[in-house]
Image 1 (cartoon, one colour):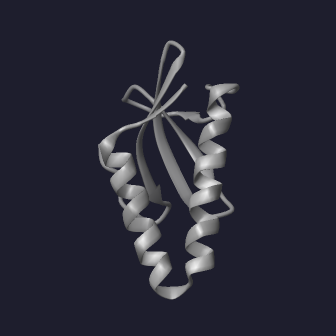
Image 2 (cartoon, one colour):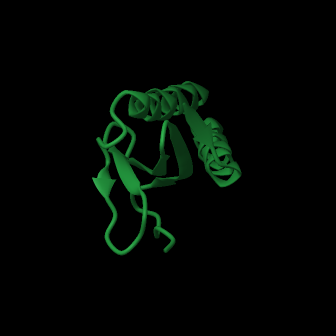
Image 3 (tube, helix red, strand yellow):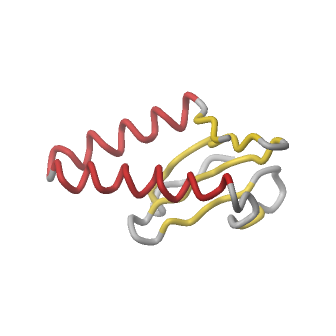
Length: 91
């Protein structure tokens, strides 16, 4: 099961609003891609890269230049953050 932490939902909202100002269709498609790729973690939880010096993994979504930070907690996948690849990733 996927659980979106509040910060990840806020990240998605900000990304959506930013893109929507330029092109609503792109905003919709980008959010769909993020949700779809994150959904793949249910069946392939280790497909993301292991982060050095911290717990958790990152899933790179090249189609939309996004990175999803997540943590595998048994059967639960906790999505922690969603950031553009050019953003400074928090520690």
